[in-house]
Image (cartoon, rainbow, N blue to C red; front, side):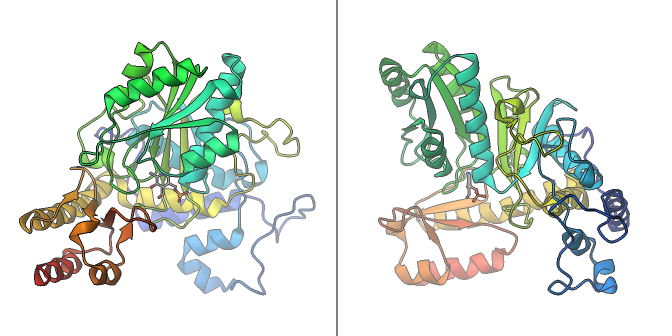
Length: 414
Ligand SMILES: Cc1ncc(COP(=O)(O)O)c(C=O)c1O
């Protein structure tokens, strides 16, 4: 995963990126030059959004926003709306880069799309697997459960509620944030006794609060030993653009046959505009979410979204090809260097914290921090009601200079 030789991911110059996007935009329909009568879509309103040619010429992304392509549907499946086929090509490429050169899949063997965010991508996975178990295993909702850790994002609780499924959350060790095997085995056994036959596992590739990584093999081992049916989705909304570059672990990739799908979020570490979650799944699974009632959409719709911004998809593609694999690797290396610096400083001060060695999150026990420091540095708690931990996320703007101010302040208070 994220190791050379890369199959399709290449760094491109600004000039080539611009030419490629313009060429794709030209292959979309042109609201001004053609007589387009049948669709409720147009370019952005010129009375509100500047369409000054010099401005648009200077930013191909603004140009794409103004053109306003709608990428409704899933474009790795074959047939799609022809109106925006030019820019759909760039979305397909972004999905393929992520599926193959980040997540270790084989060319042409995955489907995917740019979702509203990590929440939608997780919901899409749970929806697909619920429908799969209902169809192929003739299970009803009371026999299907979502299984994840207590550190999982709250989108799993949303999914359980929306899809009318039971949610089983296994607690993790308070210090290591690792799933407790004995408890996992016990919860599976108990669920089976209560009639659950099928498990939708959502395994974390970096949790929201800790940046911790679940042992995906542990889920597979325990569920196989219990004779249960299961499918594994990886919630890599946070870690998908980090872990493959900061770790040598290659179990959490498409090379692992137990893993069927992934969520990633480009609007987190990739610094893409909001509305750029990613859902990637092996071929022949999207059909479990195909709504054949979407008769007016060519190619039907297999996504939760419905209409969605083509400009967002292009933003993801632009970032990936602007950096290329080596540039992105260097960026993650730098963020992890800063995180390590912070973690070492905290250890020297004897401040208790958690950090996964591959992540850029440092989570400090609340008891170690004074309220004014928490407020001055906008630290985020695990719970606003009863905070036990506060996190620091080492993003692009979080330089060692900023971290040093924080450390100096901690020192002055001890
Ligand atoms: C691990 C994880 N999964 C899912 C999500 C949900 O992502 P979004 O807010 O983009 O819907 C988040 C957001 O923080 C996350 O950290």
